[in-house]
Amino acid sequence: MVVIGYTEGWGVDWKYYGTNEDGSYFYDTESITRPSKDLVDVWVQSAYTQKSISHWVSEGGKGFEDLDFTLISFELNCVERSVRYLRIVFYSKKGDIFSPIKSDEWHFIAPDSMIERLHKEVCK
View: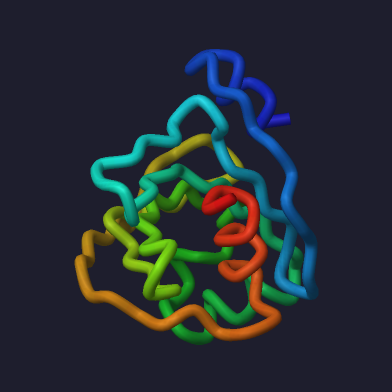
């Protein structure tokens, strides 16, 4: 419910790209930009399972007990098969924003991961 209200307010177009034991994943087709030939920037929404929320609580503390979903700004290098997380914003079930994280470190994309699925979707 929160996700639907959020997407309508911003006018984004979320496209489903997969589910795993941690949750379901969508990317915003409207947010895709290509700052250079090899790079793609995109916003992703992660809607978590209870198991994944429990993991966040054990890693980040009780503040994550009310976690609903995250919005993550990714930059993918399509040629080098690497990713960096430009911004991660956590949303509670009440719609509160907490623990925004900024990072610009590059990571290689693991085979058979949700990031690899995203890479295949947006680096066509």
